[in-house]
Length: 367
Image (tube, rainbow, N blue to C red):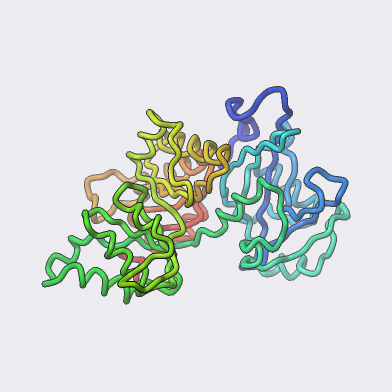
């Protein structure tokens, strides 16, 4: 869980000439209903909707401030609710710097029923419950710093990863078998990371997108897969299809290379990034990348695969982190954490308990 030092901001992010406000933000929801306040015209960033939250006092950590602010503003007691860290944002409004520590808080049915009809908070501010789809569609005008939060909220609780082509070597036609398996066994509207390790399989990925236009696709950020990203809309046998790619994946190696040698290099200008992390060093690199993209006004880092949580069949000699160490590393990240390694979709509750927002994998993530 966050430490007492969480409300201290890395001075490298900000100029000391402009004041920095450290804020805890609660993304409160019950299932697909999300709670928003409304800032009056006289306030900073006025006439906009906002998530509940407020300034972290010097004697508080982020979670303590969150519990206090939510109680003061709405009367909702969240001390017994699971608070999952989504991430941290450092935003420059010109006249002030804001460091946001964002947590997702799900209310119980009883809490929601008790508060869903409240039109005003305890401080007189307007409150409204909004549908997640409308929120993500941008129907509610939020402060600029909140746009990344909406990207984070789009990440589902489960992400499938495609099998390597070698898994189907026993078949007389591994390529056709790969396509048939994934076409038939991906759940509806699934997020799927299509790994294209073998040269020449870019068209196979495109074929899967063609036969399953409902899926949301993550592809690696490398030179071989960029043709998929630049051909928008995609064309398969002269048939135009919508481009379902929603993010690029940056490997652990590529992330460290960027951090060590080429921090000035811009990665994936048009798509959000999901990165792979295994330790504190790679999480630090991911935080640098996330901050750089925010400064450059590029699509954000929307998640980090943190692995391996448990022992896996594919890497039996790799020592897993275990839930406790995984949780400690997750707290260091400035973006949502996705559990990977020996997990199944049913283990999302453990991931939430230990500070993650999603789980990913291969074997257990297909029908």
